[in-house]
Length: 320
Image 1 (tube, rainbow, N blue to C red):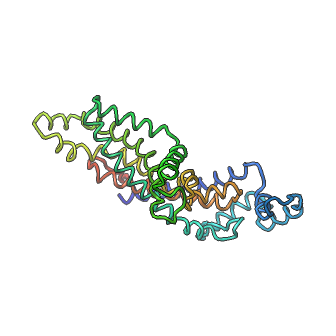
Image 2: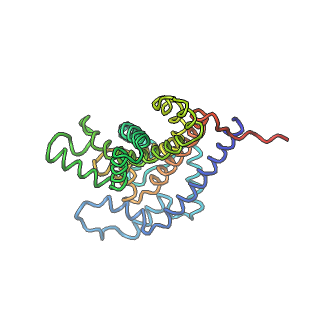
Image 3: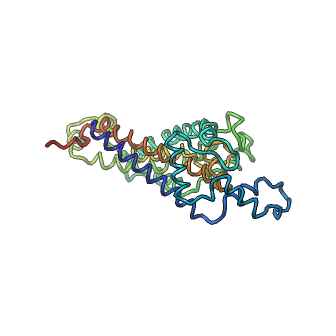
């Protein structure tokens, strides 16, 4: 196990290093100049942008280090990362780590609520579809999953706002100031991922229920409920666990569209604002933080596989 963990840790470091290179290069290939974007944010709305001179742009580029060659910019950024610093925002001139930390609680709150919604819907519907495969209950759950999987999150969010905020007046449309404000964003985010998880659990359960040891236990008269929850559900959860790890990482990544629709002050909305303002350091820091999160979650999931299915063994060190 220790050898396996060491190998995975080294692979994670390589993945994160590759992420820094790819993100840095892709951002530099995007048309436009971040110094110009920063200066435009300083201009009073409606004012003449001709007041921004080429000299102003070049001076700001030099001040921000954007005039340096790409290798110099990359090595400077990599050095900051290794020292535990994600950099400074071009627009706010504030440390990125502090700005992410300020917005992280809102995203964690939304992600946690959406995860609860997903589990409450996906697990019962997936089990129901597997137990009654080919029957009306299965057709209904599969149809609802297909609708949920196909509907864009922003469209569902707008529908919920129109129905519950505008027409019925039950819930606030946007913001985090009211505790009830989390209901619609969590439903929008949770319903989307619940559809995929439900279909995956159904397929995995059907495959597990067709295994010889399950059929033998059923032939010996074991009650179907005991068979399902004691012998079939745990191994069937392995692919669901893999999917859920990616879902959890995506939820913590901000669900940027949903946060924008509901004006939720999380890190996803922060990322959208950074993209609009061409704030390179924020985009780089956010991407690296999310890549680290995904790597950590997947590493933890690999170790959890053994708990769900004792037949799974991790690689041991080769013996010579």
